[in-house]
Length: 81
Image (cartoon, rainbow, N blue to C red; front, side):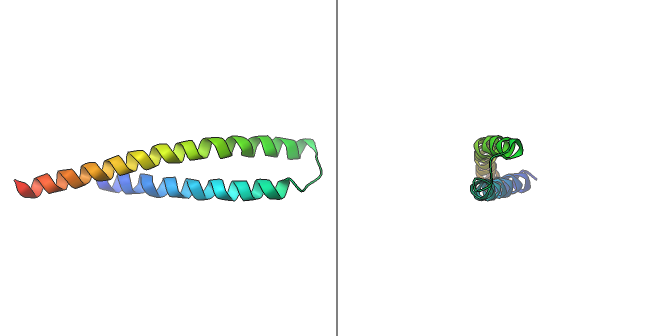
């Protein structure tokens, strides 16, 4: 079960990185629009997402890798007994 959770964490972290890349691309497209309050709000909101999502992805990726390493050591010790 721990291995499944670790794999899901790694996959979600990769999906978050893809979401960041899509957000950056969208932000570049929004820069071409005329400046209104809604465009400024969008720039601020996407800026926050671009900062926060990689942090969350990094945490999930590290936890996932740690979980996978622990699952490998646990499965290796079960066969030795």
